[in-house]
Image 1 (tube, rainbow, N blue to C red):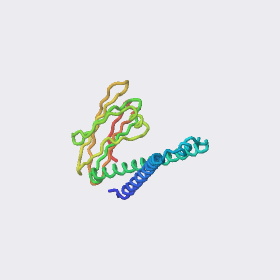
Image 2: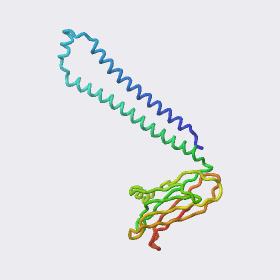
Image 3: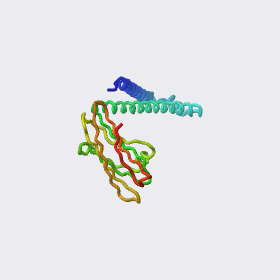
Image 4: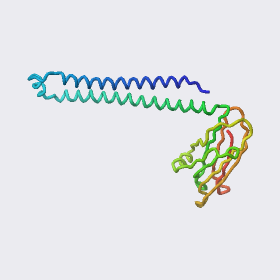
Length: 218
């Protein structure tokens, strides 16, 4: 199982960034309150009315705007750093969750790869393990494009006991000439201690002028 030290370290970073953000917000709020209170406490005498009539110079206005923009930039940077820390923390949480729910000794993963274009358009896959449906998935156009570029889709992540098992995959899509095409393929595997990886591969066969479906172990 992966060590959780990096997870704790990133957690501390996220907490530290969040605290800095709170401190920044508190300072800004406190400054606003101080200015408001000072304005209310100053007696409205002739001297105050005279000061109110003084027109700020362009230089002082630019300096005020610069300081305000700097404060906004600093706050935006703190928020972005906090977002980055949260994303890293969520990634560590997902990894830790997978380690807890799917231990290495029983972990079973199934991936889908695609190398087609002329003879088959994938629409969906149904996966069965020992005659029991464990998952089914429908693919969008963007997902098909990602697969066609060499990507792989993790169709299933679960636990599988040691011993012999039958893995069956059923593919649905459009075959040659846009006709509805359904095809199934089956493989018997021997699960041993440790993770098991299966690939459902779909490829065009130029020789046979049709798609070929296969299941193979890693």
